[in-house]
Image (cartoon, rainbow, N blue to C red; front, top):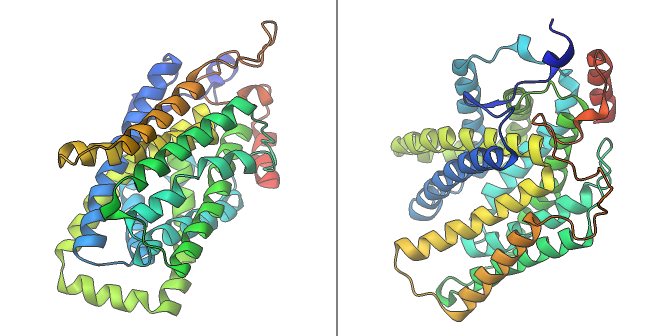
Length: 355
């Protein structure tokens, strides 16, 4: 095993080396992969859920998981590459699969604007929950909360601007999407804690283990609700749906690895702001592509979104010039100086016990 300076983990994203690159370029690469993956995902979901009226969130998430495992195996990931104990990922897997299932399933009861309204607030609970996750205990500055609120408010205003697609609320759908929000607030912070406590953790390991352990969590809700039987019958009559799901899963595979890279490098809260900004860009592109008119309310929403993003990108106005708190982070992720060399065994134990 290599020691010394060479111990610093080489971080890559689908063959693209991130380690050693400028922070802005790392952000651009990871953000680009995320935007690509989830914009394709949005188009596929629009087709399957709205055009075909197939609202089988648990089943589609279940099938997506097998595609992920197949892609990672094809990509060369093996069990010997896992550096954390399996029990580290049990809680994470339950949260991940619950979030995916509730988010997709909520589209049965909420239309897209209503879901966007709720999911756009994700960054706020993620920031709050970061203060309570063992191994992180993050504290955010007031300007960071202001930035998040501006981003969320701008997206909600933009979503509500189109009177023809006003939110359609259902009590059960609202309960599902709120449950997904609570789980999301844990998810990003738990992932960041694992990356922080053990820098040797790869994005591929995180996705592989959480998917492999998480798939069995999806079986009980599918069976108890009867969704697995309805979905099987419906998809058997329209086999091309599986091709759409395969294409969607391949795109979101790229998006998932990009998100995990963002979390490892920039933290859960920044990643949540990127995912929120992606929703705004998706909505804006839909107006541009389909030549929908933009109103003053749209402009107000875009202005708030832009101000929130710019405020987040600015240096801390309250930082002291002598402080080392805001020095550039190493490529292997935030707070990577928590451990000294030669403590890999202790790190892994700490991850398992802390998470």
